[in-house]
Image 1 (cartoon, one colour):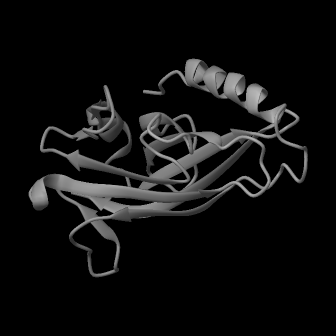
Image 2: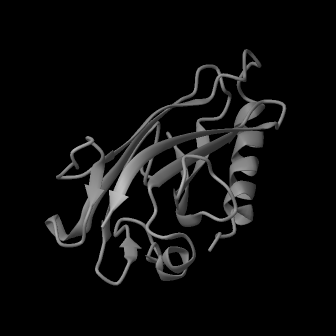
Length: 175
């Protein structure tokens, strides 16, 4: 279920190359993912966010903040996946990948991201503000059971064109 990040990544490289030449090189290793949270209308007894198609139409919101420090580019690529554990790997189901940046109006996410999604009774996750974001989780669920985590990976190129990626996970309970 992995979607191809190559085209989106290449566009980040192009814009990063253009902006990197315009900004003095400083400490360029300071891009990071500061926070990530999954917000729902209910939590279970352990305090974990519950994503249930029978509660509030299965709505949940993904919120995050990226920190750029002295990174020359204010662009990054965000990938959101569901997983049975808190570590991103090839067996996880990607919900969406999105170019993000501080260029006003160009992206659905900037230094902060807030994407609202739903989980329905057919096991489909949809994020209406994103194009083609419907992800059917039936094959993932049949192989792994209901996912227990949502993972955000954010990647940005530094001035020397090294790709720096950071992950944050949030435990959830899909019902």
